[in-house]
Length: 68
Image (tube, rainbow, N blue to C red):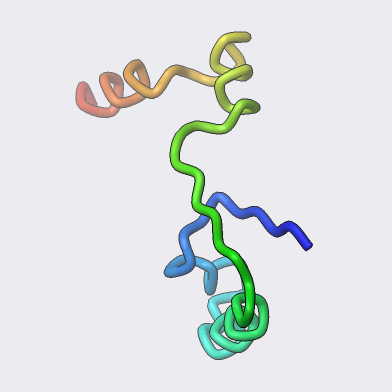
């Protein structure tokens, strides 16, 4: 089974209605005897959206927030 998420484990309870008990039980069962591979960096889909102009680049968005 391959499972992907854009959230670190510490934020998974947000995906399960804020239920930290459910999240802990789920992670316990998923991670037992598993291999965890963390990939750091931007996703290809996000890069493609930035190139197409669908979403703003990270630097532009940070600059605009700083000006408010």
